[in-house]
Image (cartoon, rainbow, N blue to C red; front, side, top):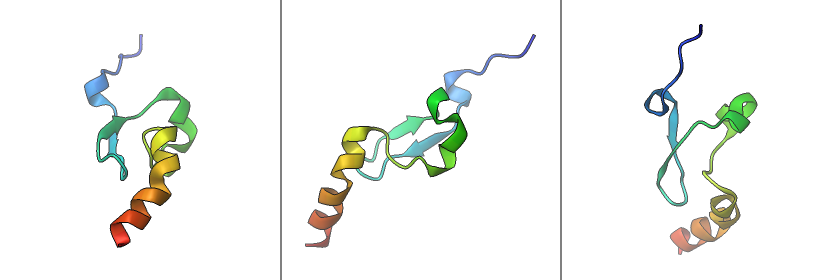
Length: 55
């Protein structure tokens, strides 16, 4: 029987918009390397954060 992974053992990244850590999800299995944002909300806000920081 395969050993179960615990949440603490899953890979983790930090969202550049909200700067919170987020963990690997099964739906990201095929493209985990290209996942940058933790949610759709952060993905939509990426432009407003980058423009407000450059001012």
